[in-house]
Amino acid sequence: MKCTIIQDLLPLYCDGLTSPDSNEEIEKHLTECEKCREVYDNMKAKEMNISIPERDVKPLKAVKKRNIAKIAAAVLGTAAVLFGLFMFVFWGVVPISSDRVHYTVEAHESQREYQYSEDDKPYDEENAEWETKTETVQSLWLKFDTDANCCRFSTKPEYIYNDDGSITVHQHLYIYPQVKMPFDNRGDNPEQFGLGLDAHKGDTLTIHYLDKEEVIDVYKLYEENVK
Image 1 (tube, rainbow, N blue to C red):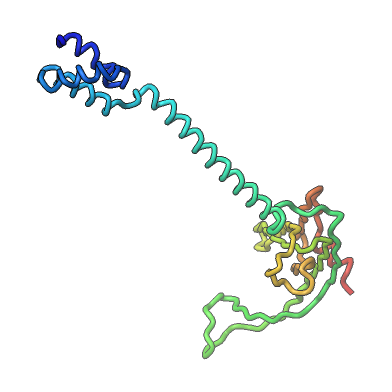
Image 2: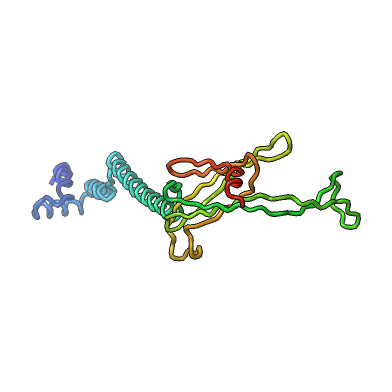
C-alpha cells in the first residue's frame, strides 16, 4: 500500500475508526516504512500534548475568581452583621430614649482642707510656709435608674477657662442600654449607676438621649435640692 494512502488513513487509525483489515495493513506498513512510522509517532505525540486553548481557560478562571469573591463577600458580610448585632445588643451603641430613664438628686455640702502658699513656693515640710485653708464644697449626686436589662454610660467633660482663673465645666452624659451576658458580673443592679458633680455657677450637665438632649444647670439644681 502506498505511503500517501497510509498517511491519509493514519488520523482515522489514531482515532480507532479504521476496520480490522485496514489496521492490519497499516501496522504492517508502519513496521516496514520509517517515514510513515515517523508521521504516526508525531500524530500520537500531538494527541498526548493537546491542551485547552487559552481563550477557553480564561473564562473559567474568571468564573472561579468571581465565585471566590462572592463567597468571601458573603462570609465578611455575615461576620459584619453578627458583629453589629453583638455590639447593638450586648455592648450598646444607640443611646437610650428619655422615657426609659429616671434619676434622683442629692445635694451635699462639705468642708475640704487644702494647703496653699501666697508666694507659690514648693512645699517643704521642714520650712513650711504654707497655710491651711478650708473651703466649702458643694456637690451633687445623681442616681440614674433605667428600664434596661443592663446599661453602660460614658461622660465627656468640656472645660472653659475663664478670665478670672476659674473653670466652667460642661459635662456630657451618654447612656446606652445593653443585654447582660451570663458571665458579666455587674452586681445586683446593672441597670443603675451614679454620677457625682461639683456644683459651680455656670456648670452644666447635658444628657444625650436618643430622642432629645436635656441640659441641666448644675448649680441651680444644687440650690433646689440642698437642705
